[in-house]
Image 1 (cartoon, rainbow, N blue to C red):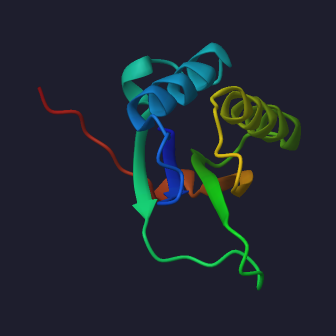
Image 2 (cartoon, helix red, strand yellow):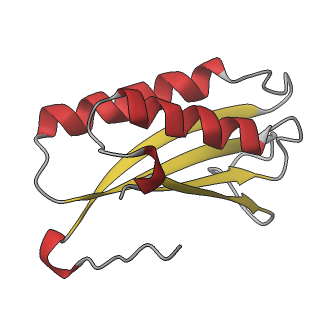
Amino acid sequence: MPHLHLEYTANLPGMAVEKTLLRLNNVLMVSGQFGAEFDIKSRAVKVESFQVGTSLNPRGFVAVKLSLLSGRSPQVKKQLSESLLAALQDLGDWPANVQVQLSVQIVDMDRDSYSKVAIG
């Protein structure tokens, strides 16, 4: 735990996905909220079909969803959200012709029903 899901639109060709995931994992690790770096799992999905709003002008997005075991305070979740958003903003050379929206959502996972085992 945690699980970080990153979605980004296909019209962001300069998106350095591996670099981005590593940077976001490092942000989570330095937060002090997680015991071992091995527990942080992140993945990225390029969204080929999308529409932002109703405009025909080029738009795109990078959306992070961070799933955490329940029990953290609203202040901790806000700090994590703001730190991840700041890291996204610092990443990049965003295309000049595309309006890009960056977002972070924190989602609680039920602690009592979550199961995990590490093999190897």
